[in-house]
Length: 122
Image 1: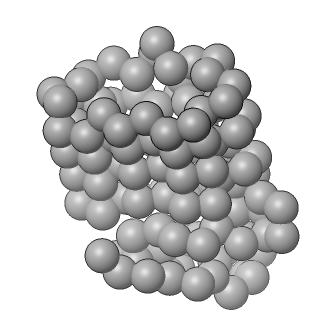
Image 2: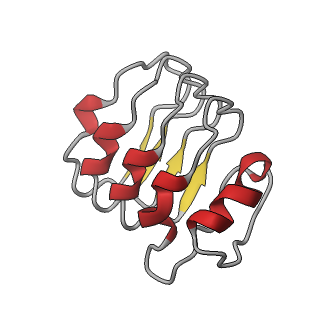
């Protein structure tokens, strides 16, 4: 199941906690979103678009999303540490396939225990 909530001036995603069948979520261009911890309760989530969610600084709760495969952090300038993404980086075959290349090169390799990542740029 897919839910696109991009650019609607959303600030609170807590209502999405426990959406067990949510697979793809678009939250891009919602600068008011600061806390993504509720998304850890979405076990089927494999794609998350947070581009331009300039209020997001901590993505460590997303480690609880074991199926997370695609993560868009373009222009999420407050996100500076991916150590908390270790759980997501080891999803299934150990690859997080897509993340903002600006910040992922050094710290995601460390977070994924030096496994090579495939990167795409928007």
